[in-house]
Image 1 (cartoon, rainbow, N blue to C red):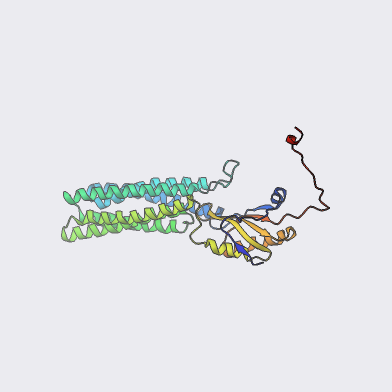
Image 2: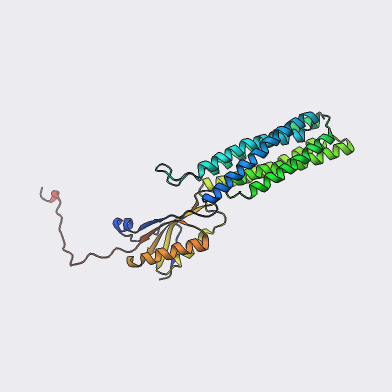
Length: 336
């Protein structure tokens, strides 16, 4: 028989008895990879370090923006203050996400990081809208800006943000920590814009460059926020991870020796980096199941890096032994 792969359950297939299903339903667990304990500890440590850098310099930049009258500096300071809140949220989500599974949360707390990334994205949307609003007001009513002061403070901010981005990139193993990294990169872009704003004002006196560059930074933040929202929703909708090919996985399972067909195949994202799989495999003989199961597990781990696998074996029910004895059932209506 040529192996086949079906998206949904086969029509007219004889399933094994329920007892056979229960006896041959094996759930495989393995925890590892970048989202394991070492990855989470690295992410949490990086988040804590960047939080200290971001929160400290946000206060310096806020004072400098007020003193110089620069919207670019003030908006970047506001961005960094929101980043501090976002980093706190990300740190909390990383700590929650590292907790083990419980009897109420059998998959664990991994999606707390996804929720943290989603909330961080909402903050980015709100901040971008505020910057655009303030920039429009300043274009209509220009404010004097101290270009030299902006240039000095923004240069210091650039150094701080480069250091923060470098620290965080080393621990950006999850969607949550990547969300925090995009916040810091937004700060870095903000510092570059503030430097350009200060230089132009200092050299030419053109005040409109300050709100115009602030709008540019807000557009970059909106693009990053939209990307994070899309990734987080993809995880929450239990979609097939974008790096995996659903049909190729089904064909690979059906190609295992002893497997005649595959159906009810589901591949989804448990957390930001970890995929899970469940499927029903129709086999010819129950005694072949241990070998087939081991082969499927090895193939899924090697070719697709899927280590959380639930496979259900099915085979045709055998006919009862012995000669069947016909039994006539007489309805009570015939006796009346």
